[in-house]
Image (tube, rainbow, N blue to C red; front, side):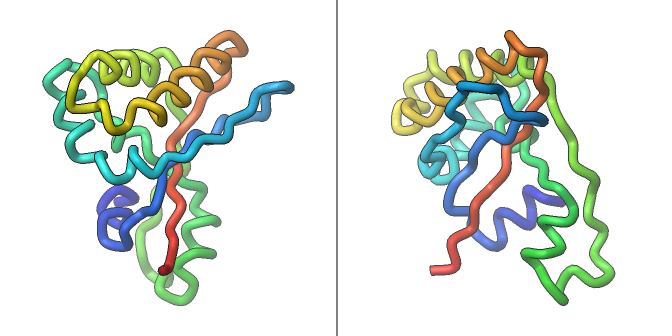
Length: 134
């Protein structure tokens, strides 16, 4: 549901949200190249036999409802899902080995950096999107 909604409204960027803050960890990342290349990255992930990045996308239902406003009425909005960092690291590290991921390399390296620290702290995560109504 979220991914199909994301595709319709055109997310500007994806970023990592941790289930809790980790002191000293800067989770800032651009995420625009993940958004621009999500279909190519997902295809490469499938070829590698790892979970595609788009399957890590989730959002707090309240955030979705706030974003959609009156359009949220009657829509089935799934609950927030958090994922294991180990699975996320497997995807990101696999993608970093692929030539077709070169344009998203900086974003993928930031994902790896954030997820590596999250793994050390046993913190789960999800990808969330930013929409820019240009």
